[in-house]
Image (tube, rainbow, N blue to C red):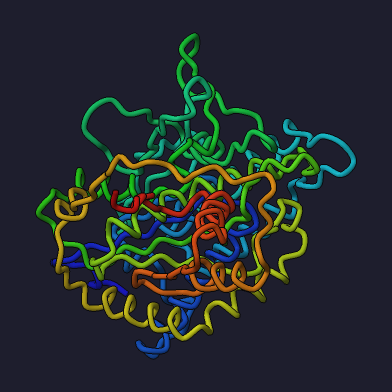
Length: 417
């Protein structure tokens, strides 16, 4: 696969969301990419490595581990799947008998990562920025947060960057990005007396696509053209609500992560609406209730992902994306992407929902199917008409309450005096 990158114009970026068992779905989507690519090139699927096609790969949590395996270790997708399943088979995710033993999980994680590196001839004290000059690797960046400020993501890179940057060992960095607080202990990084504990899942970075675009601009310059941005999600999240009957368990963290991912995805979908280089792939049905313990039974995730990949629009998007990966012709620059016109408007919020409001089943289902369930990159319009006082405003307010992650602007249109 040598010579794929060479002196080409457009760069390609691959982003992995943070998530639990949905990470397996991400790899299955990428496997579909590589399988089609192998067929086009008339080579074996295992001979096609994402590192040969993506210049920058990034991720968070289990997605960060996958990004490192594919980019720095140059695994093919099947190898990455095998490593991921072998690791998660050793970890405990079921909290039905009490709290998760975070210390035990942390020790197993560290030992497994050490074995993975040693098998490939990488010493345990190797720093993230130490690269193997004998092979051409993608640049990889993974994110974690200092426990003292989880709103600020810290980047751990496999390449040097300007300014002060933490340079942990590979094992420390991978353990840090995967340190979901419900399942693992924080990871201390730094010299004695100046160590800082790090955790995974920095708020706003669980979908790292936006950060990766800024990172690419710093690496390659604002004038560098972009051929393709592939953002892989872990499945659309369930609507978050304040239902008092919800069990307060470790899966709340997973729900919050996936909701955070979609907030960023919705912003980018609006900002990059007219940019063909961007594609977001995320299973839209069937994975809303995925729990962390489903690492032990991935059959349903495989079924839902396979069904998603057969959707005509999704399959066509993958084919278009593959053409961009192979041709690497960029029509837009990083500067244009990172500074595209995204107008923020201060608007009034929707009126509160009356405690006596009960949505009618038929119009409610039509509204959800059209605005949420259906797949389209075009603007969706759903007119609601009716005589005054029949509940039009309440229906819209209720919809926005049930789907708080959708981007919208509430614009009242009062009747003229």
